Length: 184
Image 1 (cartoon, rainbow, N blue to C red):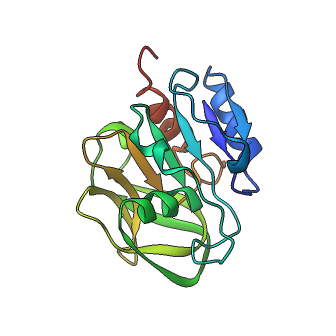
Image 2: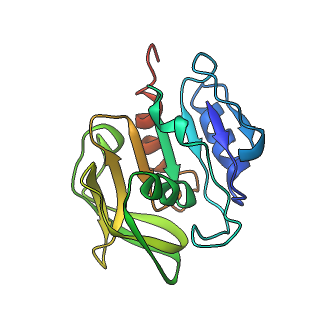
């Protein structure tokens, strides 16, 4: 599993959680990541301190979204997915700390997880308008998207951090994501 690090304070923790679930994982920086269809079983795009609106905001090669492997964007990674698929983003006052989300779709990522869970948020951008190719999986109390999926692809975005202990069922969410790997 390739974890592409956009500067998240939790990138090493993502790697650790994946390894605890029995998968090999390696950290890459966006500028050093080379796409090789046979090399990766899944890709995780980490969070990071930048905003997608920053002049020098880190990017990822768009070809990544055309390969047939599961992709999970966490916080900043979710914003990159949204940007690529034509969603409308906006800056908000930072949302930092525990937040309750409501799960609208229990298939795949949220299989076996309660309707309402507390998660750990840390972001200043959010989705204002979902593109038509997105399915809303969960939202927060302000009705902002907390989890999305690209229709007909195993591409997901989470506005929260499943890898931290403050997120209820976070390990199960990561396990559900990794179960989408072919021949897992």
